[in-house]
Length: 192
Image (cartoon, rainbow, N blue to C red):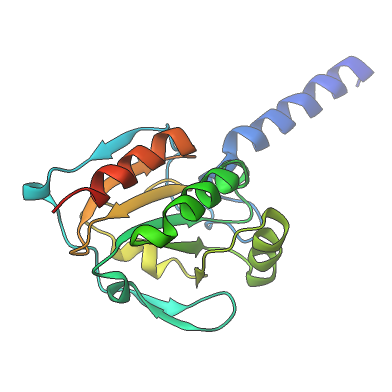
């Protein structure tokens, strides 16, 4: 085989791995054949107050072992971010999520990450390296993500914004930015 063909084959293989991205298949990622998750496209879906569905009853333990229930966030606007250490766009959005969290945490906004189908040690290292200060639930088997049937987080990353009644007010598929997420949080905060 010529060196040029080998180089082209290696480049094609590398591109295939990059294109797979957060669709899974990496260490700790979704199992082969798990096609429920798709690549995020940055789409924002806002839900009018009259059409909102309640978030499911979900609970688990944070990465540092503390018990947490999604229902404990009622009364606050909650931002729930589904992420994994094996997901490159998740690394890219971490600083934006932290910025929105820091700007709004004293205004009645709670943040909760859901670490999806990951290795716990890798997830802890991810949070430490990227300086994520809000808590994350470890969802190694994906059951929390699967509980969101009405407005599923069917891309990693996905961010859901819940209103004070615990209803899903918005879904952002794919990596988010400060300029995409903060206006939605502000809008839901302003609701009576």
